[in-house]
Amino acid sequence: MSESTAHWIRVMVVFIPLFFITGLYCVITTRNLIRTLIGLQVLSKAVTLLFVVAGYLTGQTAFSQACVITLILLEAVVLAVASGIIINAYWHTDSLDTRNLENLKG
Amino acid sequence: MRPIEKEVFALTIDLLLLIAMTIAAVWSVLKKDLVKAAIALAGTSIILTILMFRLASPLAAVFELSVCAGLITVILMSTISLTKPPEGRQKEEQSEGRVQRFALLPLLAVAAAVLTFAVLPFNFALPQAVASGDVRTVLWDQRQLDLLGQIAAIIAGVFGVSLLFKEKLKSAGRTGASWRRAGVSSTMAAGDDPSSDGGASSRARALKEDTGSEGSNEGVGLQPGGSGVRNNAGSSPSGETIRSSR
Image (tube, rainbow over all chains, first blue to last red; front, side, top):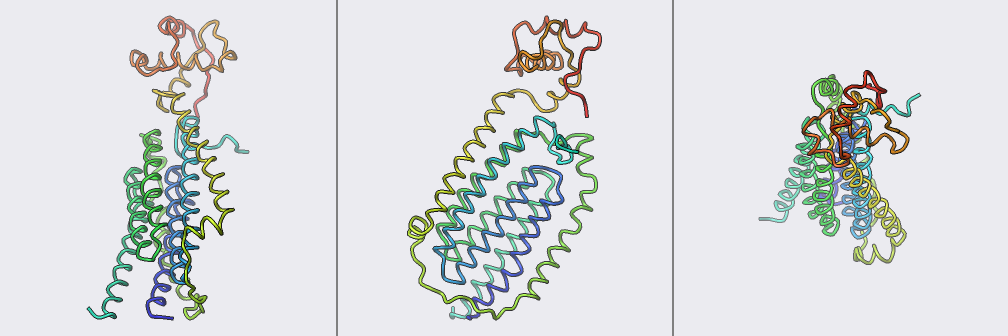
């Protein structure tokens, strides 16, 4: 393994979990629906970076790029649909607070 | 510049980019103002794009730049502008305990990174690097099922976006707060059958009552003769409340 490859693995092993934890923590702790989406985006950025680095290290950049393109597209679609849901929830509950989404509670 | 120096220089640039991306990601999560958080997210995408170019994935990088930094930021911005930031008591409720909630984030992130760094072996064998084919060949010839899934996802996204704009048109000119105020203070006009139109017109009238002269500008779905209804509603002693306050 070349020095460059080993370095990349070390760097990624530190940074990718960091991005992932940041996004996941945001999704779990926040009470704002839009911020939940932002957390989800940060989370998926970590996965995208992981795909790209894995493709670079194994030399399979074509395959990893195909996966990343699919991932980016799904990311955009999820965001579009979730935005529609959030706006509808806003019209119904008049707030973006997750604690107010209690219509199905109990 | 010697080759070794060149390599160290390149790795330093990558490291700096990763640190900048981390700062942007944490900024987007922690920033109170949602617009600035969305801009920070776009910044994260741009830095990720540069990293992708450096990691020999130019096509994915172009997608990342155009979709994640462009389209997603636009969708987020339009969502933020279609909704209203919380005010007064709501804002207090939402921000209470905010610092405590996010206090564990740095600790957890560093712990996770250190743990992964400590546990993972670094001399594991990577698969032999093979000559990578063309990304277009891989995408169109080998990953056809993925493409079918993408098409299905795009159709779902189209429905999502159409829902977004449908709601916007339907409720044009009314803000969430005025909607709620109208609901809380509204009274049924005499002879108004709520089942005929789902109570929509009475809500619209109540909105007009609530907003006064501004209502003529706002209410797209207002019926003519709103002033008469307003008098009716005003004279009604204590009519039925359409929406109860939380």
